Every structure is written in C-alpha cells, then in structure tokens.
Image (cartoon, rainbow, N blue to C red; front, side, top):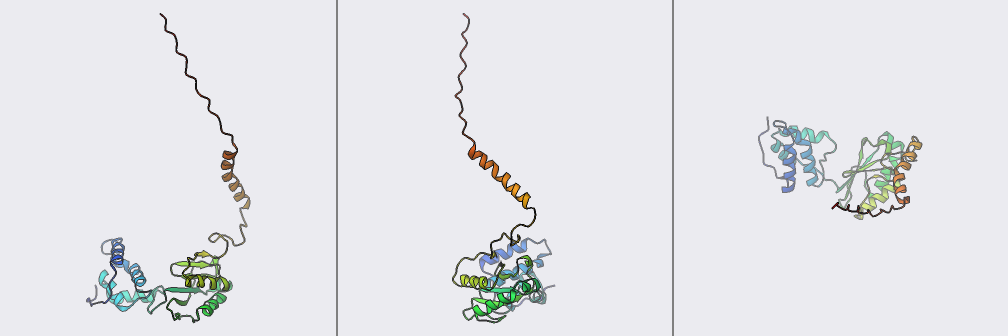
Amino acid sequence: MSSPSRKSDFSFTPENLKKAQETIAKYPAGRQQSAVMPLLHLAQQQNANSLTVPIMDCIADMLGMPYIKVYEVATFYTMYNHKPMGRHHVQVCTTTPCWLRGSDEVLNACKSHLKVEVGGTTKDGMFTLSEAECLGACVNAPVVWIGKDYFEDLNAERMEALLKDIQAGKKVRPGPQIERQASAPAGGLTSLTSFVKESQKKAAAPATEAKAAPAKKTAAKKKPAKKKEDK
C-alpha cells in the first residue's frame, strides 16, 4: 500500500528518467519496488552525490511505495548520503587489515593535503573525506574508495600524489598503485613458478618457430601433356 502522493520538487533528467524506467522494467510485475536501491543511487548521482526528502518522495511515488519504506532503505545503507557532498567522495578504509598496513598514514595524508577532518568537505566543494568500514580488498590494503573506483596499495606519498592528480584534472589509474597485477603477490609469484615458465615458453614457441622457418618455394605445377588421339 502506497502513501498519499505529495508534490516533490525533484524530477529525473530525461536521460536519467529513461535509465530509471529501464531499471524498473527489469523486475517482474508486482516486484518493481525492488528497483528502489538503483533508483536512489541514480538520483544521488544526479543531485551532486546526496539525497533529499523530495528525491526519496519522488522515487516512492514512481514505485508506488510508502514514503517511510524508501526512507528506511536510504538511511540504512552508508552508500547513500544525506548532506551536501564534494564532487569526489574519498572513503578511507580503516578496519584491521588496512590499519595494519598503514591506513592511519593514508588518512592523515588526506587530512593534511585537503585541510579537512573526517566528515568534512573542502572549501571548493571538490572533496569530502570519510572513513569506511571494510571495502573487501584486504589483500591490496590500504584501500581508498573514490567515486566508482578503488585505489589500492597506498601509502602517504601515493595518496597525496593521487589527490593532486585528481585536483589537476588528470586521468588517474584505479586499482593497485604499485607494480602488480590485480591482487597477485606484491613480491612476484611464490608458487607454480616452473609451471608458469613452461607455459610462457610454450606460448612463445610457435611465434619463434614461425620467424625462424625459411619460406618454402612453391614449385610451379607442370600441365600434363595432352595425349595424342589415335587416328
């Protein structure tokens, strides 16, 4: 049962309205309210990274939900923001694995460079700094979540350099900030090393053989002689 509708001063842009309708259409009849979370996320992106009561009311009306049900979802999950946020939300993981790997230094680098405390937003509205609970990338600790991307294997110097690049509008590389592939061992392979070497040799062998093999000359085929017919 939905609440009586009340006028909201929020509306999706035409582009986002189309995305919202496409999202709702993914759910079977009678289950469209399951789209509440992606719609809240879409609205938050449109509204400078924060939600307001009119936004939640608008989504409740779209999905035929009681307003309180949307409020419950939006206030339960920390991914939804209810105050003005910076364009870049910097979330530093400070739970045990990241803490053991130096997240305190990373967080202090953020505070020092941005000149804000946790929960604060820079004067230019560019950054908001937060602490985050486990981000699930412990093997690459310390980890920081900015926008849609994870930045891993950080220390104070790398964190400061990352913030400077974002401020300068430079393209930044998400993932490990050291030379390693994804979550592979930081010091290189420690097991199956002989298997990997053999696999690399086999993979390289056909290319090497192709280069070394001399080109074969194809002999011109002789046309068979015509038989003389008996007179």
